[in-house]
Image (cartoon, rainbow, N blue to C red):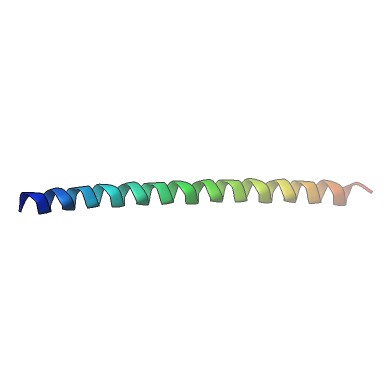
Length: 51
């Protein structure tokens, strides 16, 4: 029974680590995408305003 509870704790910890890692990756992708969109938007505006 003790082995089972230890296994459960390890599983929960690993799942938590994976969730945090996936959340971090998703956040990084979102930040990069947002920065890229802002960069492209600024570039399009400047090129459109200049003759």
